[in-house]
Length: 309
Length: 309
Image (tube, rainbow over the protein chains, first blue to last red):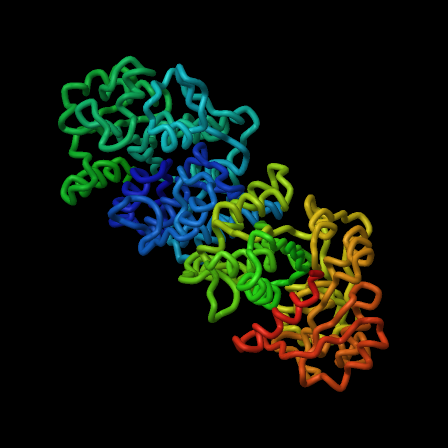
């Protein structure tokens, strides 16, 4: 059984981890968001790829949810002492990855190749692919101005109201090597309960990927990131309210309309099942809170239950 | 009393420190070697500027002689884990400086301006100037090939015999802002007991600096880095043997011929005094080993004794 998973950072990593408790990790290909990649002090940082890498390789700080376990912050302390910007926190262990990756990218190695090399070095069992090797950036349009995702999310604490989300570079971006093949070969394509606008949206903004998912929509299942119109974490609910006019399961189905055969929604949203159906997706009602082991298991079984026998 | 000091890294920093025990640090301008600057993982590293900065600001590891006190090596551990190069050791605290500096250089800020900013942030009392803001690199010619200084010194453990030392970029390099003015205004110009070929040579390779020193040669005093034909540390003696045909005090005076009015030599080299005179410099015999407090004081008094009353 081959799985392809479209995933953002923290929620995506937890979802892939949950799937990998049941499916052989070697059969899972993760297609990761790179829309919130950024340069910090000239280093290329891929927050979602890194969260996936660290979490799935067992190197992650499970309490904080991002970054490396046993992290130290001495480089950052120096940067602060010297008056440099420190709004995007880079730990010392984390920095080593950014140094290696940035050097490789400058030497012309594609992001997907560096990622594969780094994943191999830490013994990652899943295949980890960036959605694209090309420049693709999620930009948040607010009444105050247009911001890069991390600038809006971290530096400004996502307080500016989101009027639109655009993906700069989407016209020219093509799928990274291996992405389309993984989508074609998968018995099931799962969309993690990551933020649709800023984590999954950038992946689907790559035309080739969107078309490949569309072609296989009967084998595509998304997991709603919302429970009772709220996100477990982050700004997904507020974004749905402001960009889709509501944060119900039907709104999530609407975001993925034409792309998915089924949408997993929480028991708390059972009343929205018909709204999901109206947007062309089969509603699958279960418990979706991944922090609870039994709910996590129910979620995984629901998702994997869709795999054709 | 204004002092200008031409200095390399470790020896230069100790010498400036010793001078600053007697002269007000605010009256000391350090003109530092940048010939062994290098890129590590795409970061601009200035080993001599950094050793001077850390030592003089009290941030240095006094036992190791280079790098920051209380340093950690977690970024390096990650780089190693990921199969990256680790021959040039970058500590985590140290990395913060390289990040800030590299970012500023990429944004077009000259090295002298970043250095001044960083020095101000750590409360450095001395003025610290790179010899030049331009590209200038010390290259070591050996039977095995031509190497950048740090590559030859660190990566290859300075085992290849030195056939020549060249300074790439010397024709186009001009003095950094403040350097010529400091040389003009100084009551005394001191040349630290750093390696003449690879620490002082690159500074003097900048034509404007060489001329300015020449013009003021009666106010220039160098301290020999050799004691009884041996260097306290490093490859200076072997370089003198192979490039100047000998490692006596007269050979050191020969290196600086036409540039200095006096050469401080160790009591162990008193017999070389006439050889120093033959190369046009007044020999000043004293104890020169800076690790001994009384010798250090004697050295400083000998140097400062040359300041015109």
